[in-house]
Image 1 (cartoon, rainbow, N blue to C red):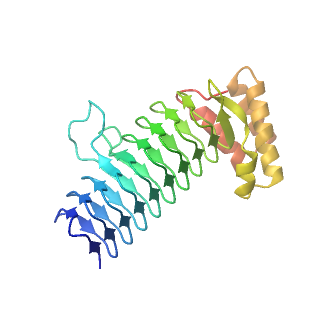
Image 2 (cartoon, rainbow, N blue to C red):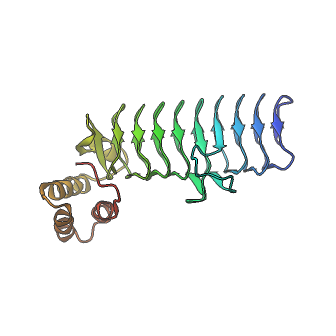
Image 3 (cartoon, rainbow, N blue to C red):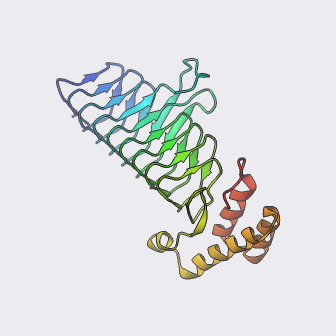
Length: 256
């Protein structure tokens, strides 16, 4: 049975699972689908188009599936999809999609800290930690287990690789490849994320292989040549293939 505070407003067309707790002054709009065991503290707004999994916690002021801040948006029916077991802290805003992709996606097990924003059509993976007041412009992609510090600004259309650590206060208009630390001003490659990788169970041999791959790629004047050489060195490594594919598929260029 759901526990809905008498001062909350839940549209009769919203579809709620079981055992959800809806606190005072929360608003759940029509065309919302929510799973089980979610907890909305006070003053949370879930707008139309939200598709929410189970076990999520929403803190006061969170606003989910908001109308996109995109002048090209013409009211088309789009969604904002959240997975399971996310912690959505105070004043987090997440926009729903536009006609470009049709949906904004946030995976499972993420911590989205206070006052951060995810714009329309972004895709955020699983297990990410995103710091206070960090802002994503439209159509940014973040792969799994990224750690992004506070007040980081992301240009639209960029991609962030898995297992990165990004320094607080950074800003980037280029892609950030996996397994690295990115920081300084202007933002650039600052080494392999050794501590983060060890905490995630990467062996010393794999970490050294990742390190050598970046040495190989960045040592070349032409990135394509470095990628080809890295593949020849480590043809059977999924980590190296991920790095090489990331560089090859980058549309905005990769930080150096």
